[in-house]
Length: 198
Image 1 (cartoon, rainbow, N blue to C red):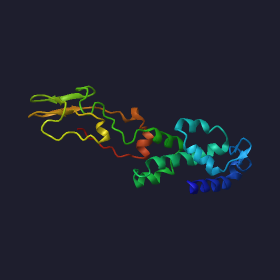
Image 2 (cartoon, rainbow, N blue to C red):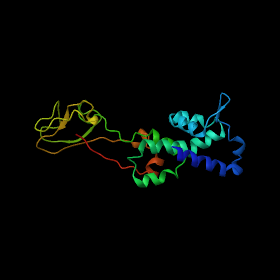
Image 3 (spheres, rainbow, N blue to C red):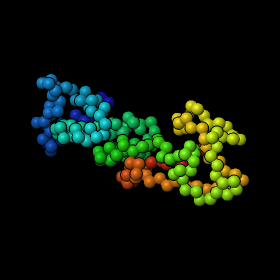
Image 4 (spheres, rainbow, N blue to C red):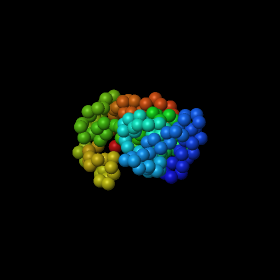
């Protein structure tokens, strides 16, 4: 965190002639007549949610600069640091703040399928083909291992879809944009999408 803040101060000082930030350098850093170090202000700002950060941009030029140029990038790195592909990490520094805000709101690493294990029969699914004894929902898997209790994705569900001796097909259409995956996210980050059911 400290290195990001130091780099931010250098950038602010190097851009001071252009943006006249030098005269505003302490603006946004004084609370109750006390000068708060930039590092602490940055740390505090990283705890805010996206909506609060967007609103906080209008506090002063220093906060606007910090939030748009650094805080959103820090938050995305902290949230997805270990899971972002290297190519995605290199793209982050080029993205505008509002795209980073969209990334923070998008439901990465979340199952977007509805009724993924038949707990609501075939609700949310379109049956394309249901041969043999048709689609069945088994309250607990028959003829296979039980669903693991310790897996978060099963969310305490025990049921599963089952087919019989003939072909069965079903589908569910997921509109990624309805889940916060904007065109900008898809174009810039190009996230991997994993599809599975159980």
